Image (cartoon, rainbow, N blue to C red; front, side, top):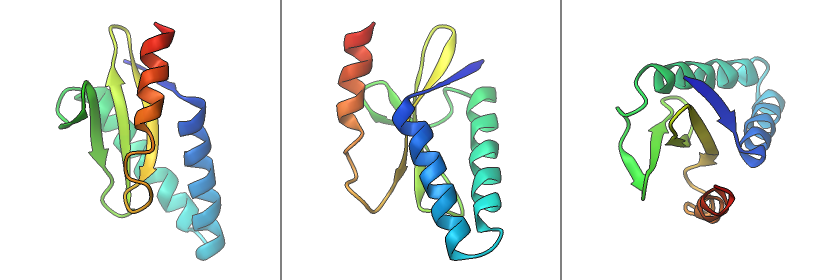
Length: 103
């Protein structure tokens, strides 16, 4: 199944990668690999993750304090956010309204 990223989710991914690269050499690469593995997992089993809000599912990363929030659409998975779990926990819910309005 194809993946479609909200622009904000893509920016969150890149910002976190930059942050982790600045903290420890190679940590940004570890971040990227963990997110890629998580994306492979949801592509393979899109309905396996628990529902976080309405029809939005979440996959919590193992090594990093982030979660992927996504919606299962008819022909793709829509990645809504790659959210840090300890900062403004529900900020991304505003994006859900925009996605639904855009349909």
